[in-house]
Image (cartoon, rainbow, N blue to C red; front, side, top):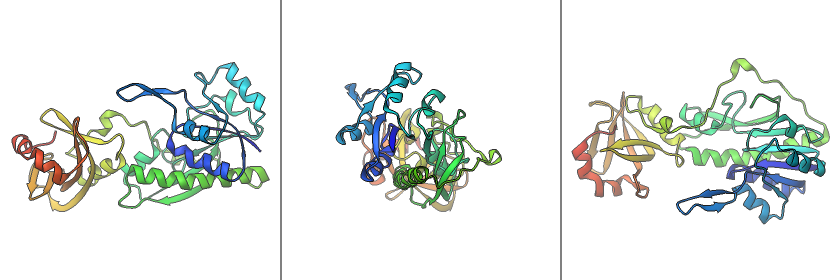
Length: 309
């Protein structure tokens, strides 16, 4: 079976890796063009391109997915199946080229959390269970017929990074099983229930700002859902502070939301109901640090401003 693989970030690597390890013929890896990154604006390839080149795979990087030259490149490969893992939205002219069509791996139990940030929103919303889904592409994003799904428990200590890695590995296993089912013809699809659909829109800067007048559990879930990237943030004295790890303290807030308490080596913040203990924090233009390290250098600033905004 000749496979064209579409992907970009690290999340896609385990899925491509498992296909190679099982001797599937990946005739091309399609990814985004190289981009300038960092302060030096050094041109960097996507993580999936780096992995593909290390494994001597053919890489295609179209600027425009509707370009006929790109379509002809794919047609010349005569692919049997297309697989998408964290790539751009494919036009119908592309995903219908393979003989058996194209399926997508999505990091949620569809139809829940359709969109760009399913892992983050599952954590932000305090879900206890999420999962991975493979489904055939159709024109409306994340709405195609489901092939396979697998549930994954969300642990209390999970943040975006740990859950991302967990879903990437389990998702890779589901991709392999899906390919085997399609290859053998031993599969059935089911339509998504539109009544159960929820959205997981792109994470914006405004979403990342902590609102201390929310409940402690809402704030705690926001912090872990955005850790380590892009990071939930707050403001103290007109400077931004990113918070990467927190713990809920089972004590009622005694002051207005955002007010800070220093208790020995603990940094506590009042919310709408309980106190939150900050465990890892990063001041603007500084490195990430433990709360103990932070208090060594910023205790006077905290005593001056007294409140996160």
